Amino acid sequence: MTKQEIFFDDIERMDAQDPLANKQKEFYLPDNKVYLDGNSLGPLPLVAKQRAKEVVEQQWGDDLITSWNRHQWIELPTSVGRKIAPLIGANVKPDCANQVICCDSVSVNIFKLLATALSINSNRHKILSQSDNFPTDLYMAQGLSQLLGNQRCELVAVDEASIESSIDDSIAVLLLTQINFRTGKVHDIKRITELAHQHGVLVIWDLAHSAGVIPIELDNWNVDFAVGCGYKYFNGGPGAPAFIYAAERHHANMQQPLSGWMGHQSPFEFNANYQSDAGIKQFLCGTPAVVSMSLLDAALDVFNDVTINQIREKSLALSDLFIRLVKQHACLKSLQLITPLERNNRGSQLAFTHDQAYAICQALIAEGIIADFRAPNILRVGFSPLFLSFKDIYRSVETLNRIVSEKIYENEMFQVRQAVT
Ligand SMILES: Cc1ncc(COP(=O)(O)O)c(C=O)c1O
Ligand SMILES: Nc1c(O)cccc1C(=O)C[C@H](N)C(=O)O
Image (tube, rainbow, N blue to C red):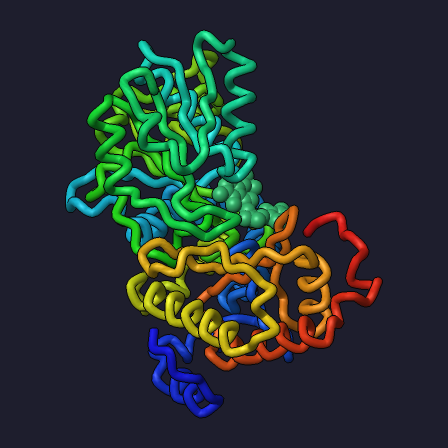
């Protein structure tokens, strides 16, 4: 980053030179809004809108139950998993088994994977995680611990600085999120996975804030298991199903506890006894959410003609620009950036603390800049490179500056807490 002041002409040049600029027209975005929340809920891709109509009216409406075969509904968890695989560096070897499947929510998938990893590393019982991990990751470990008892499953949650020194031969599983949902800080998956393996520890990586926006090489980095989200950077829609990655080398020893019929090796024989599928399909539990999964399937096609490297490059350029513009406004010194400046350590969002962060966020939303707030005092802005322009960033920071310098956030209507923040 240079220290030079940036002017509107520079921004126009950035947009003119942006190789992803034409992707924006593949999304439905409301007029006159800047959407800085694609890291929480991606916007609507036009192909998904079209698919919603097809799947509801034609497939469900006209073709009814025959659609399980006619429109391959039954294959969706596998076919969507295959579409996700190249975006996370999975199935890279030519004759490798399928290692990715689309199913359930991130939370449910974490439960399945924690139980699986504990059963593989059965002479150990500790799950190591980060105390400021996304809460559901910790909650699922706590729930499993309650079910199995502390002797068979114990959660050890440490602060970020102590993670590596806490990895030792007593730990069964390491459960971490690659990009921290609050700070946007990135963990080095390759290095931490290597360290964990030196101590016989299995790793589960939560890719909720990284899949679709940063290069990931699960196979090359020797990751054991991973989960990720369908509704953030993959733009699959609210509540879109999540995914699971399980490295092929574990397939013969896996046993997940939510042994629903879709994970059975032959579900349509309706046997009384559970016999799990030998591969990744054993992570299925019940009937797939066909409508939602179909929308995700369509949304993933937006990635067909772009590379994750291009996306990452633009994501960093957008956040670089946001940081530089914030620095140009003396008034914005009251916002404290808690995201690392170092590019390798920065995900695709920025987090600023301010004691009026909630009200500032509400004031931004009222002005058409959709950001979000994370308790107790974080203003978060997310950068989804497929639909944001550099002008959007300029407008966002100009608006932020006006709200802070004119203290617009002090208006009491911006202080009222909503149920979902
Ligand atoms: C890091 C992380 N993990 C898990 C979740 C929860 O995912 P789900 O609601 O699909 O269980 C989220 C966001 O909601 C998240 O940010
Ligand atoms: N899944 C969400 C929801 O149902 C409502 C509101 C927010 C969410 C989110 O995804 C939160 C998100 N994981 C975050 O990092 O804040």
